Image (tube, rainbow, N blue to C red):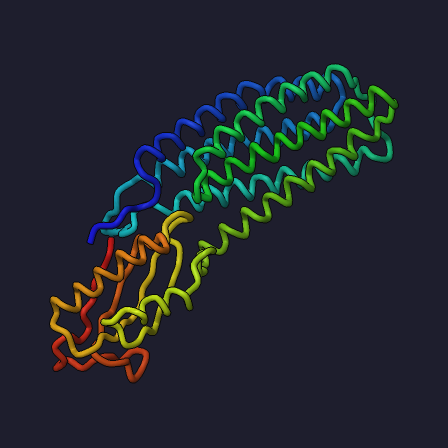
Length: 315
């Protein structure tokens, strides 16, 4: 039985275009923030520029990962390169952690003796930066779906937009009160915000790499659904994992009633796979169809049984 894999071609194309748009906007504005931060003495602006630099790197990584994930399956990579998007998300998360470390170090170093900051120019640049980041985030949010790769790129943009808001606030405080300590203080807030969003992304990536049960899919519920079918007597050795962040796989042993013929067994398996895809978006299902329960984990129906060891696959 044929089954869909991940994003449709149209969605993949939209995702790729969204990444290019975000990359162009951020790469074009990065130099403005670096020059402005150095010229006007704003660590908050430099912190935002560092984050924007990681955005550019992250978007390049996301584009490379997206391209790799579209490679077809081979003998060596039977699922293709679908997990390249998960590795892209991991690279993005680790890049953000490094950026946070730099921001925290510089902010703590400057807090006791804040450097002079020109609030007016910083406010103008930060406002433009917010427009760039917010626009990029909106473009990516529309096509992110369940992809961790696209979600990682979106989080880069969203966190940077929030960081720009912090820079704007710091510039306003400096302009209205002259409190130059607000610049490094806001930098620490930006770092905390980036770290919070990064932790959530990193946790999702690790769960996929550890082949944990995907969020939103309950193994007990899936088991009950399979057993409820009139052809199924028992379900065991059920496993759920993510091939990629938007592609769920399942394997299970199904004990069928009344020792069906091979044709009947496969028909039952195909029917259940269609239900799994429709109800739970499980696009890869592999069933071991048995005539009676396995007496041991590695010992199933004997070789003399008519339907012993029958497997059906949905790929």
